[in-house]
Amino acid sequence: MKIENTKAQMRKGVLEYCILSILKEEDAYVAEILDTLKDAKLLVVEGTIYPLLTRLKNAGLLNYRWEESTSGPPRKYYGLTETGKIFLKELSSTWDDLKNAVNLVTTTKTKKS
Image 1 (spheres, rainbow, N blue to C red):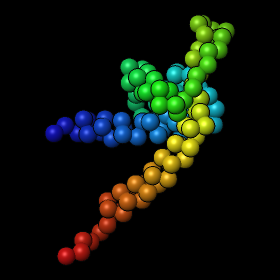
Image 2 (tube, one colour; image 1 turned 180 degrees about the vertical axis):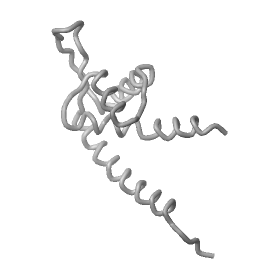
Image 3 (spheres, one colour; image 1 turned 120 degrees about the vertical axis):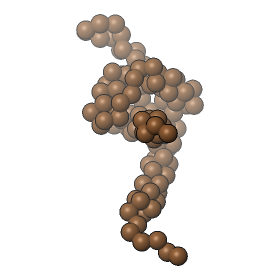
Image 4 (tube, helix red, strand yellow; image 1 turned 90 degrees about the vertical axis):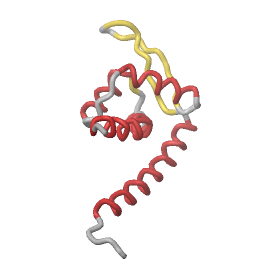
């Protein structure tokens, strides 16, 4: 079993949550989302993010708008819908529970017999 495969699967598992969290404060276009993920050491390529954004949009969690750019073609800005905000709040709670459970399991020093 290759460690890189497992690491990639772990990153993919939290990618939706991370993208929704990025868009929580303000709308962003794909390059901004990718830069934020890269800065956080979550390396994601465009080929991964576009299908995910489409899936989140089709699920009613995201919307988008086109905005003219002074440095090239128009940009598609993604933002959370009201449903997306509710979904993110639920995911945040689930993430906290999961993080606490994993920390408990992985930091336990002695096992009960």
